[in-house]
Image 1 (cartoon, helix red, strand yellow):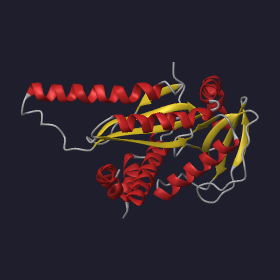
Image 2 (image 1 turned 120 degrees about the vertical axis):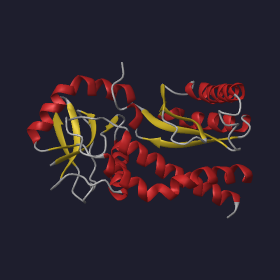
Image 3 (image 1 turned 90 degrees about the vertical axis):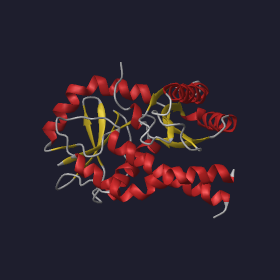
Length: 211
Length: 66
């Protein structure tokens, strides 16, 4: 099967790199795009090691190119004509998405509560609503200055009740230091929460074309 | 562990979780074939479960240390 790692511009560079099973990274020129692929004997097994390898390949591509769209883990095609057909059908959309992330990296921000959670919903409807409102306002206070440093942002699922806010920001590479300074400032200003930044990542959360 | 080591350990674990989340749940979906089952994805998280549970604790430690 042909396993897809990422989509690049037509003149995108695919550096020598090992894929999930040590297979060499290859490039396919399709519909005005370069597709970084590996040819494997079977489907990808979802193991932590494989997931990290996929991430490492995308990172290697992101270092060499100013626009990269990572493919979702596990994307594979039974043959070259199936891959070519699918890329052809989605080519315009993929090129637009590449333009959207050009020159940018993704930064993650997690805001976590450091104290015990406020009263449970059953205790008092009013207390509960007030606590919810305070949490929303807090998230907004964190988000607004960070969004001002970013081209785009999305809210990601919090995954844990202790996480007040989990956001991804599309930041121009040269603005990363400013973004990190802003995150540190916000962290100092807010009481009772930890503001943690991760990245730079390839623009995983901004890879899908959005209207 | 001193404060700096705690913060570094926290950052490292958080980075790993964030990477796994992105690789598995974000990125371009192309092709009609969804090749991963929920069970497959869960398997990846089994290895990370202890890690996920410990992030909240580590965050508290980092703030206390700060």
